[in-house]
Amino acid sequence: METMDYGDSAGLLAGMGAAFVFVYLLLIAFSIIVAWKINTKADKPGWACLIPIYSLIVQLEIIGKPAWWIIMLIIPGVNIVFAIMMVNLLSKSFGKDVGYTLGLIFLPIIFYPMLAFGSAEYQGPAGAPAPIAA
Image (cartoon, rainbow, N blue to C red):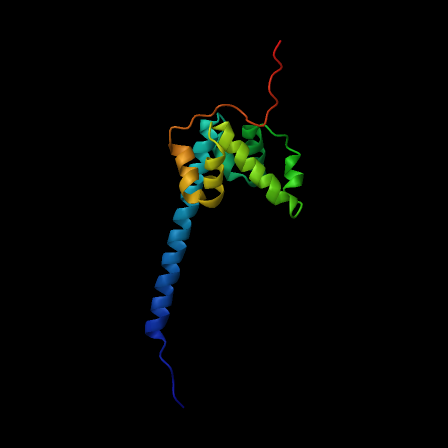
């Protein structure tokens, strides 16, 4: 009976797996840093991005929408529409236009860090009703 030696290929696979885990952890850490910076730019606690449901509530506060929108994000199909609306309102809350919204949707690895570390300043919640002029 012949035995197979998997020593070389097992080491290669272990190394590739370790590299994948390392890159994945770097992306997670970078995402946390970006979300933290966006929260602090909007005068919200940065640590809020670490707590799952609370981070969503804080994002809804940043864009000026009520917390019941979380329910809409649970409903399949409807959640896609509301998520796109939230990204658009986030973009507008920082003084950006629809083109930037498309960037946030299709190239988030580039546009979210640009929003966090760029010159964009928080303008206030874009989804809040406008004050009535007297």
